[in-house]
Image (cartoon, rainbow, N blue to C red):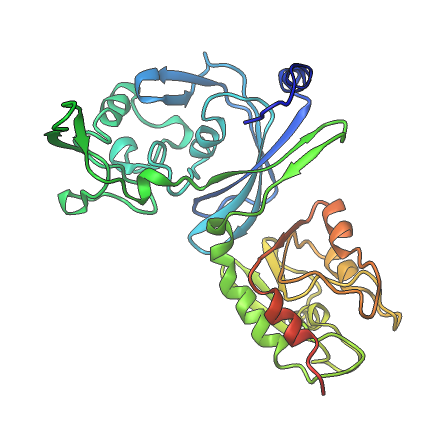
Length: 357
C-alpha cells in the first residue's frame, strides 16, 4: 500500500504502477524442493469463484507473469524470491501452486482437504468441488495447510462458527483463530522504480530466516575455534546443501593466512577431488566476505563468485578495522547473488571475530 503526501505524488505513483514501471520483489516459503535456476510462470489467471476468493490458472484468464528464484532449501520447505510482472489477484500464490510448490501455510491454496493430494499442481482439481469445500472453511471446518494440516475432527482448532450468537447484536460468533488463520508466508521485500529514482526494502521475515538460524549458529561455533590474533578477524563458515552440511571452516584453520570461507571451500575440494560446488549449495559466514586481501590472496568474495553458489547468509558486516569500505556485499548482489543478513548474532559474531590471543 502506498500513501501519497499530495495529489501530484499520488498521480505520479499511480502512473508508475499503471505503466508497470515499479519493480516488486517478494519472498515466500513454499512446499518442497523448489527448482534451481530462474523459473518463470506465464500462465493466465481467472477468478472462478469470487465469493470464496478462488483464483486459478485458466486459458481464458488474464495474462500473468511471475519470475521465481530459490534462495535456500532446508529439506522440507524452500525460501523463494518472487517477482511479479503483472498484478493479478493472488498471482504469486496461484502460480506457486500451479508449479507444485504452494506457500506451505497458505489456507486457501495448500489445503489438501480442499484440493486433494496434488494440491492443484498443473491445474488439478474440479472448480465446483474446490469452491464448495472452500465455502466450509471458517464456518463448519477450520483452515488447514500443508505445513499444519487438519486431518480429522481432533484437529478442529481455529476460526469457525460456534453455533452461538452475540447477546447484544445477535451476530454469529466464531471461535478464536489459529496460526493457519493469522499468518501467510509471503512478504513484500522490495519496491523500486525501474528508473532507480527511489527504492524501499524491508527486512527478511523471521519465518524465512528461521530454517537458516541453526547453520549460522554452527558457523559461530566454528568462529570460536579460531586462535585469537591482533592482525585479523576470526570468522566461521559452513557450506550447506538441502539441509546437509558439506564442509566447515574457520579463519587460519588451514596453513597460511586463510579465511573461513576459503577453508570451507578448500576442504570440500580436497574431500571430493573436484573444484566444483554442487548446485543449490548455500554458504553461511559469521562476517561479510572480504573484498580485498592485504596479503594479496584472492578475496573470499571472488572465491564465492568463482563457484555456482547463489545465496550467502551473513551474521554481521565487516568492520573497517583492517580494510576500509569492504564492498563484498555490493559485489555479490551486483552479480545476482542473494545476500541475506540473519540478525541477532551481531554481538556474538563480533566478539568471536575480535578475540585476543
